[in-house]
Length: 199
Image 1 (cartoon, rainbow, N blue to C red):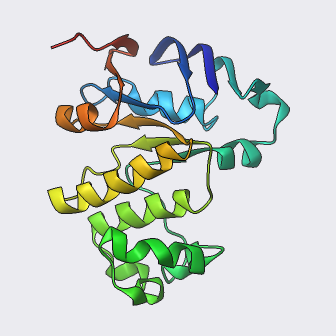
Image 2 (cartoon, helix red, strand yellow; image 1 turned 45 degrees about the vertical axis):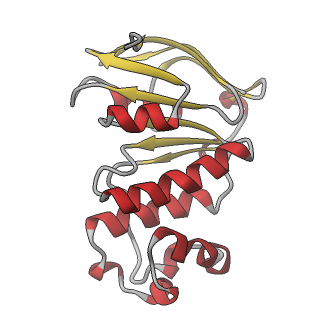
Image 3 (tube, rainbow, N blue to C red; image 1 turned 30 degrees about the vertical axis):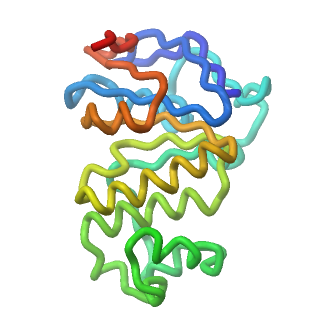
């Protein structure tokens, strides 16, 4: 589904990776190892060498907005540019169906962004991506600010998306989360990606 061949940039050594539909790949590693650089390079947010394609079509044949809607990147700290939560959703009604499942009350779409905690911002940023129905989700520490209960809610929804065919590449510092979520686990060290040794 997602084919990555020879992807590299300063701080990131050559990466060759294939991610099938419905598959989750987890990447761990110390801070500054290059994990976020890899996700941003796949999303075409930073210049990089190499070839990235989706379902056989090179991203060079798509506009950047089209690619980033199909292969969506969710940063560890996403940006917020408007006053209320609902202002960030083109179809708040679709998002509303997930609010309670993510631990929010029904009126969360009317909340001012300024009142959100870090964990609330993190869950709602993920929801912004989910409602766009991407084919691939690039998740940079999607539960780093969440308690175990909220983490379980997020993981439940991500498992559903995988079952529906969404591919996920997830950066996490949590080895247990990597084991729960991903059948393929990697470690990033000084910009080099390698398969995690079996424990």
